[in-house]
Length: 381
Image (cartoon, rainbow, N blue to C red; front, side, top):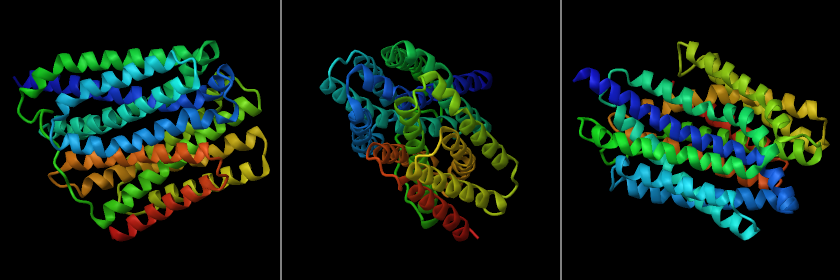
């Protein structure tokens, strides 16, 4: 029985990681294929608003709905339908032939993405809270789901050079497979004690957690704004292909991996040099991108500016996630839902900053993130 329980847990965590992997791929894909879609549908400079603003606004609107839903219905019951709705909206978006159709489908995709991401985090915590290997499950989930950005850079770019529609259709197909997989194993998991069939309770937020989540929001916003800005600049202004853009952003991901390893090897998560390194790297990266936008520097300087940004992201993400969960106590699943919502709010804010062409946006977001990291460390001493 214990062996079967461990196998069921492995399957559940794997499915949840795959679902989040698809969401991350979609968010990264938009930045890569936006210039291609702009050329195909003759959107011009309005492509950023058409592709990003409806998704971001709908995502923000979907977050409170997801929070209310998960306080009344267990994640095991909501996840499959919301993933299916995300898959359908992605497939329909790939079939869009007019601007109006694209706006509607992107809004539907943003709303369903808010429901999915919140449900995934809630289900993950309820699925692992009774297992002694909980931290290992979290590590595996983060590793697999986080690799979606790298996969998008390497795979989506070449596909987008053929047809951007195949990117959306592929995302929809992958999401549908995940929904079916989850549905098949949900009955067995919900029958187990401590399974994913529990309603997510509300958990309050103390000042230290507020600072940590503020850092998560600002860091996600900075990363999203930087990637979208770089993608449009390289493809629309510098003539790069989507595949070349994906390769050009690989140093950012490599720097993020180095930052994550620094946190993993650090013995003191609440203090020391690692948080200061992360805050400093974010500040340098945000200032460098703002400087580049102001002087319209070379492509090499733009790509170099993403390296300290990636290092800061790699440090801040796992550090703030861990600190947020440290104050959750027995209500870790509720805190996980809040943390997932904070991360996605950051994505939405970053998309809006990029679409509005705010040149000082990266520096401002980096400053907020750095200050939040420092304040969090001071409050925990």
